[in-house]
Length: 221
Image (cartoon, rainbow, N blue to C red; front, side, top):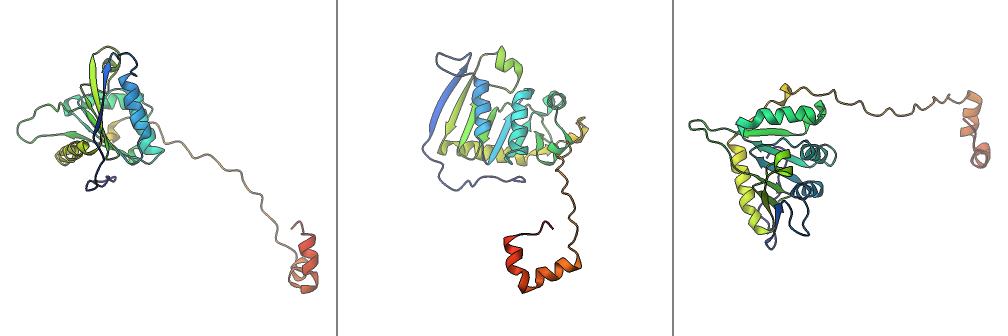
């Protein structure tokens, strides 16, 4: 994988699952918060496969992960819904520097073109979030949804599925998105130039007779 990918040969641990609903059941957190927390905890890689992606909050979380924490981020999208994603990119205040870090892909078939119905996120090689939840405002506020958070060896299925979809996808040119200019790095305070020592001072600095004096009373120069 272009941006790096976790080792798939090692054992991923005992499989454990947690189920979350929208609206939340008693004692549960909101599905969107589960997704955002999973992104915030990622250390190596985040791989998203989504039919519709228009949630600017989740997108900013992904930008922070790849741009600030250097996490490899991959996103696969359904081609027919790609214009909605590009419109969201503009609303997310994405600047040109982000394009150097993240690449976006969409599924494409050569003969018969169907719609991709997968909705899952694969994280760090040992965790997956899958279910009916799309990364949209409607899903987080109005629709009824269910997701399953899976850890352990079972996530190997999501690993293999994502790599298959990735290889059968085509690149999307994000330079068509109007982005803000990359912010300038913060200016550092200028250090005042130090004048070189005079010839007389230089001779004293190299004269052993003045060595003890120079160490006990350092010259301002």
